[in-house]
Length: 181
Image 1 (cartoon, rainbow, N blue to C red):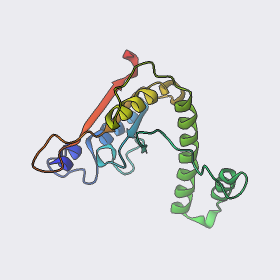
Image 2: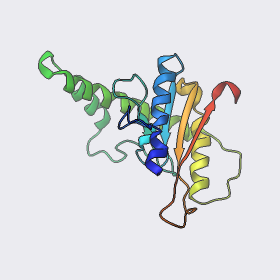
Image 3: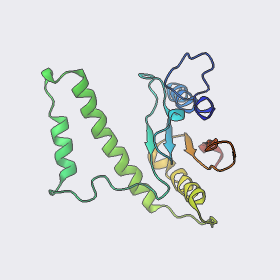
Image 4: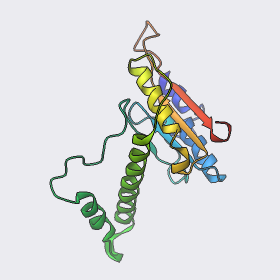
């Protein structure tokens, strides 16, 4: 039931995708830059169509975003990664080119997002606990919208313990329109 709620694909027309990812694909195609954020691991609800032109999801934990390679074994390791991955040749092939481009793009986006989140200030007092930590992080991410150049965000966070028959349905998708903040 949880998976079906995340997919919203009654006729199995978009296998392996989720409703949030497909919505982001459409918004992005229509000129509304959108980001996807999961505060609880990689989620199918935020997976769009392959080649759909939409964004890939950011996956964070409730404590925020860790620095990429926080303890490098050599100086300027991030630069070395990028240099190696930008040194492709005609014979590298489509998959190598795509992988290298996506790695460099991901590193840049992660660095920007971390720097922006680290600068945010939350004035709302959250009561504490894991769900409160998730909502505080979502509040911080929302404050970074201008730096990220988006007009829509879709967030996924979990809060469980309500169903006595099994683990529980843990789905919360929150979207916001930046024009109304």
